[in-house]
Image (cartoon, helix red, strand yellow):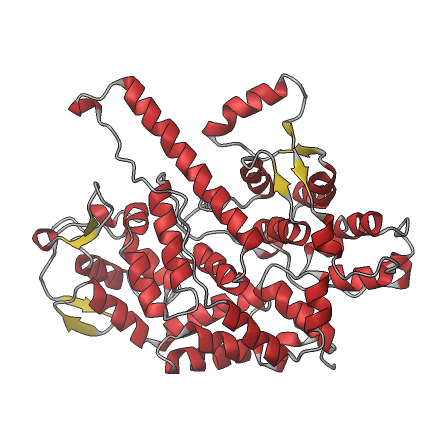
Length: 463
């Protein structure tokens, strides 16, 4: 079976490695080879701008130190505001970034190193680590993530002390971040937990420090080696095992190429990744410059995650939200809220994104955002949303919120022929090939009407 043609290759490349492209970019890039476009994407990704929304680390007032109930409530309210603010800031960054490949990789690492803590400052710090090293060296990324206050708190390493080791971080380090289940023993977990004793952070600053008084200096037996290991030693031993490169390469493959693993293709990526000393960029270049990345079986076979779906619409139509908090409501209703993974393993992805109710919500979302309609929020709300829901239910029987959005259609239609046909519009907007029978169902001939119909289809859910 032959690979897809050049314009389709470029569109496929952008849909997987970024959050889509505008029509003007599509027409321009379609004249370039995929190799040229790959180089351009990496060149654009050099720009790393950290999120800087949360500027204050909040320290919880303690009643035992004389804090009043009002002070504690004020702290909780401000903490929740910070959590919402960092979510919205990243969603807005995704919609406007000029380094989309870096942000897409940040999203990958966000799920790989799933973390959920009630501290917007720590979450932003972790997000910036993932952004800074998104295309750099995996060892550096892994080490900085492991020493971040967010991860130390989430996986309880703050409580990991000599004589009383806490195994949570040691277990997830191997199971979820590096080797994968089945490539270590329970004894390896216990011994590595001892090596990570004393890895802590200061509550007043969030700064990592090695608490030598709480570190176990005894000999540890880990993955067939023996020594007075500390945390960095454990990480280096894990990275010497080629299974780590294979596990991470497989994660990258399933995120960008196909939910069903192809062992031969993953092994190609593994060789480059391992032999480069865990440099991320060469592994991605190997993937993107391989013919199999553009093979028909790897095109239009992935379901967009909720964040990818929302971001694609926001970028394509330059959508402005009068009340940005609605972005959180949309994420939750579709099953993926940034900085709020369901568990330590992150989001399952793939077909798990879709069920009968979420598919209908997804298909309604484009017309809702572009027409300022009513958004139905059927997902179970978090406690901080209860007041919002109670107020909404006084007016409507369902949990709905009328959103106020405006789209800049000129951004979408720039350099688009006014008499563009539905078939050509479908070729640009939809990943799957469309039949004449389907095109004949598109009503009207003005761009807006045809566009909303096309992006409200099940086909638009695929990339």
